[in-house]
Image 1 (tube, rainbow, N blue to C red):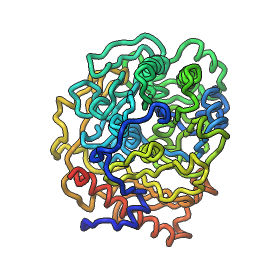
Image 2: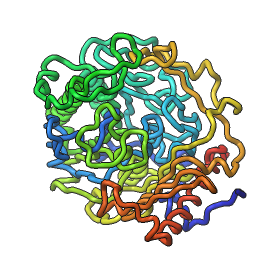
Image 3: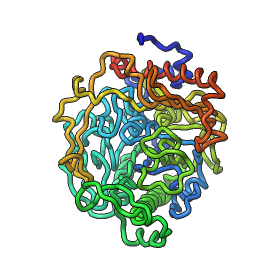
Image 4: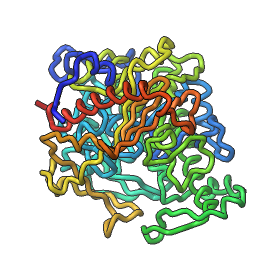
Length: 509
């Protein structure tokens, strides 16, 4: 397949690219005004699926804080993670770009140092920027060129990956240290310390809080476990695979016991967000703080019992990529609203940039600004959302993008990978585009239809769903609507071409 450039119209259609002067060449940006600039806090659960909230009708879970946020703010009922797994989705939050553009293909693939993160943008705009919790875009140690600090955060207490009770974190890249207690509450406690300092310094704050919950292996406080002691006995009839907290290896346990621990983690995470909201209210910051919560991918197989959607974490069906999404901002969203507009984690950067009137990076973006949605004027997404699990090799024959010693993790976790209790990262140069690069499970989600494509040539398979009338993706329309599928697939291929151009490093030149 020959390389070709997208036309401006296709770029706008598929990616919502904005033509703005780059912040990093603009000397007139100025600093944020403490009195007028909104504070921004981005919160994310780890493996927290769409249905796992009380407000979405879960029959067992107690999530009173999320329920209250959904009842008072902007409830995004069609919110998506940019990828069905964690590291890629987190990259989309930082950059407003699909993770394949910079080689963050899967968990434990790092971001690239040349990416312009939202933290870099807001640091230049005068914000105090802090990261707390799971990072998973590269090691958090000081030497890493993709640590939170390297990506623009002035303060961080972070972990290379996920964590459980009594977690180990690195503070600002130093040697890891153990913190006693429930992990979500620890992360929020440290976040509040950072916010207090920002207030003392007279700065608006931008804070990213990525919880380690409810990712397996599961654990919980006694009082949280007690809330779910009476789950249906029928759940005990099924055994599920997950990590043993004792050995770090795979084991099998009754689903009922697993769910009790998973739900306990979700409730603790919910409670910690309540502690954060209370601090904001007590310190006069709630009205002017945009609080945005979401999950990073769908529920994994060891946690699904009530999802109305097809698929789970790792798949491109709704169960793998549709997640909870809520924006709470009392000063700007005074009346509760529910939105059926398609939205995605890649929208965060362009939304924040437009809200603060700071330029977006001069490179292809895959998100769109949701400022009109927050203001109540957006009724339909202006461009499709594209998803893609890259099928390229593991990069073993390619040149590493970052030296191995800089990609080695330091923060331990229970779940072992081989013989390691830590995680190492990778990213590779991809200077040339081949026809095989277009393979992998890819999706174009329009305002009504969703096209799913796998394979190439003779091995290609396609599915088409009307997800508005068929949210469970039970009725494949590919045979009855080939013209719609062909139109969407052409858009999808053009978008892939643009993504591959970025993967070669073209955006950095």
